[in-house]
Image (cartoon, rainbow, N blue to C red; front, side, top):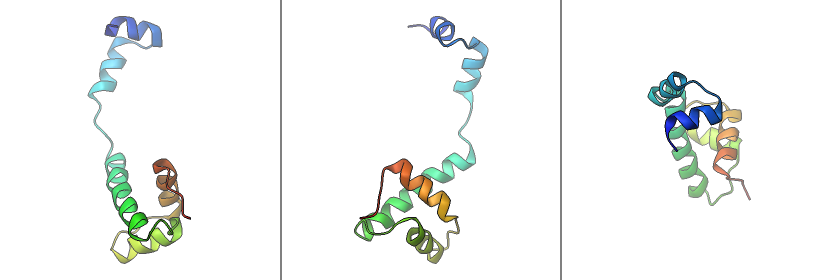
Length: 83
């Protein structure tokens, strides 16, 4: 399927489609991806027992200050749930 046909099917302009492809990732997205890696490390380091609050506390001890709700959202996106 070429881009012209895909744009017609999705009802978007070709210029909008190409603008979307050129768009860079936001700094928040990049930060969240790095944070996800740290969260996974802490989660498995503590034998899958830590939830969002304790992971947030551990991140704080490591010098990374984030809200527990953000950590919870990222845990959910990763499909990780404490035992």
